[in-house]
Figure (cartoon, rainbow, N blue to C red):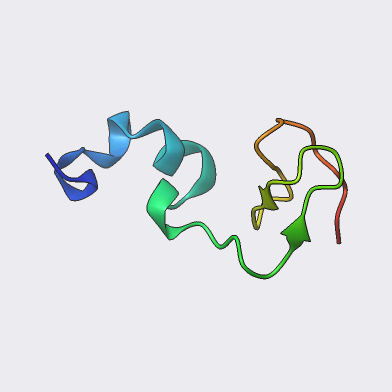
Length: 54
């Protein structure tokens, strides 16, 4: 089953963010100073904290 097989209305990531998880941009923000993970385009990282990176 691929991400395209999941109907949009039950795809939680699509409903919340307007795109599939595989389409999120991790390359333009940087690295979280707390957990050293990539910060996504919504300014969140793997530790779950909003680091306020702009």
